[in-house]
Image 1 (cartoon, rainbow, N blue to C red):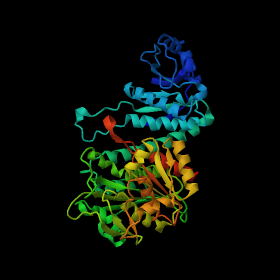
Image 2: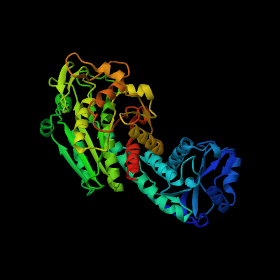
Image 3: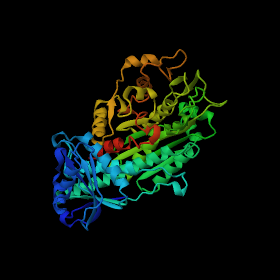
Image 4: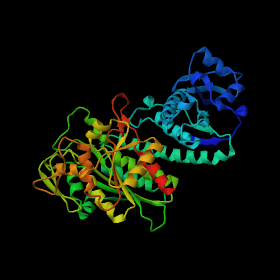
Length: 496
């Protein structure tokens, strides 16, 4: 899919499809009004004829304009002009994306960025359309027969930029939007693959493949022997029940000054989670292939950072494993020792993600990081607490938490700050080890974060629980690519 900025005059525009907007009471945006003038008032006549008011998401498709240069027009309602905010605008963009997808046009031109939601600019609007359109166009068809594969007809989308001053900003927005969308699609692809294909070894191979594309991105994949030598007893204990060996994937992007402290991203890479001996219910267990969405999003974010060539130093760490029941698997009551030397009593083998992450967080110390952010589909309790709109955020550092919240608002991949109080640490006490791996039914997402915080005391750290946001269930089941937009926006902000 190609995206580009164009400076053509509307009067001279030639394209199979134009997408434009209109407000409440059928008031066309400035660019839409110029288009209507070219079409002899056709758009206003049709809006009045069909009695379309202009509520957010209202849709009018003009299949035949009578203009030889413009075959069709898609008009999208934007609501009241003084009430246009980011949420309303994204709703309109979602309708526009679906209409464009279903139009069968190969090329299109967007005029929707000629209006700006409150506290946003045209560059933001362009990036959002790329994000939403790529999500609408995305299809996972790798295992479908050729006749069942959805055919993607749209080949290019141009953003019409009238002002010379805004052209450079539009091009940069397109560059960032494409890189983020490609990173999110990579995360979707990896997460949607079945567990018999996307094993820890496969995940490592895909990271190596991405590393070969970018000179500044170095990738190494540690085998179980290497992981054992590091003393990662908690991490390795998770893979005992599986015939698939664990892998520790390290991606290092060196785009900043040699002595600059890196930002470290840590992603949970459970390529399949049956729960181990504490086995999960059979219903919906197929969705446990998505338990590596944290790792997939870190790999996707690293690919986007390398594509953008950001002038910073970023490290991605993905502890990858399966969690299956067998005679050699972890048992409830087992005690393992982490890389940090902390002993952990495993009260529930289905609370395994924190066992991977705690050793990766300990490993992150060797980089003397500026900040460490771990991302994981860690707890169903987070879905209960927050639903599926924001990801949960815990942090031991106020500035880091605030920066992630700002990045979430900017990218519309939002987070919600949750407590990390010492009161909750009491629930993790063990009679037999330094800490238990669960803290009981109350505040499960919080006690999980408190567990991880014990391994992240020596640097600014944030934990993002994406259990409710990384994938959709039901008829539209599949990975969302979140939180790639959040992570990349945070790193773009650091680069600036």
